[in-house]
Amino acid sequence: MTKHGRQRTRQCAYCGKHREITRDHVIPRCLFPRPLPNKMVTVPACNDCNSKKARHDDFLRDLLTSDIAGNESPIAQQIFQEKVLSSHRQGKSLLARIALDEAKETPIITESGYYWGGCHVAHFDLNRAIEMFSFLVRGLYFRLRRIVLPPDCTFDVRRLGSEDANKWWEFFKENQYNGPYTLGDSVFWCAYQYAARDDAITFWILVFYDRVFYRVVTMPAGFEWEPKTEHMV
Ligand SMILES: [Zn+2]
Image 1 (cartoon, rainbow, N blue to C red):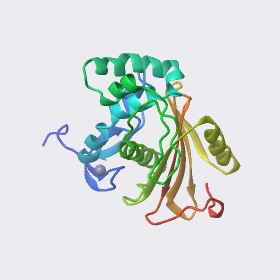
Image 2: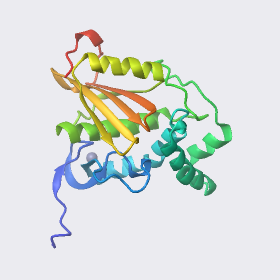
Image 3: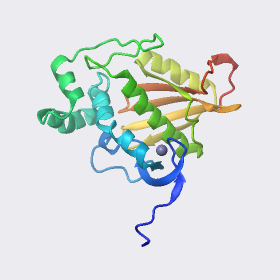
Image 4: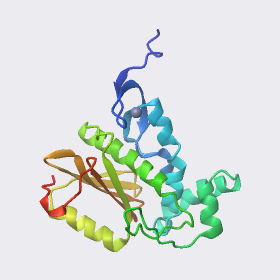
């Protein structure tokens, strides 16, 4: 076997299995205008996880750039014009088609009964969004702490309006937090906390295009979060 043909067996940042790995861009390249930032965030990923996550790249781009808040960002507008509209013309992007045909602010209630936030789409695939944000958080956590989140931990994903985003950020500032970590000029930043007693308990703020705020909380399977009892770092 030649040097170039050999693939190393390492732990996949997403599923935690030891397999032949490739490098995966945690924050998809399609979210950035060209040229790309010099240092992108990459992690080792098995082929299964890599291709599963890649299927959501365009979905995430469409979701963020067609978001009412994201759409006010010049960078998001540029990407929407160049990528989403062109794929719409080619009939490739279902979400773009929906966003253009039926665009309106739609309140979305998650399975747990919370307001998801105004999204610029008529039909919204919540499970797909949760799966994509689970990949993002797993990748970021591995990159930042070299720890794989347990395969069965749960993800609570919410898009925050500006008022809730401020409250969530205040909560971060009252505690010790890690970050902020930025990638690209006005494209992405995040900060996170984790529970001292359990690595699977993590709190995240993910911000796209300086305007679109997402909150993600991870918990071990079967664990209920009580905000005041956790010591976060
Ligand atoms: Zn994997």
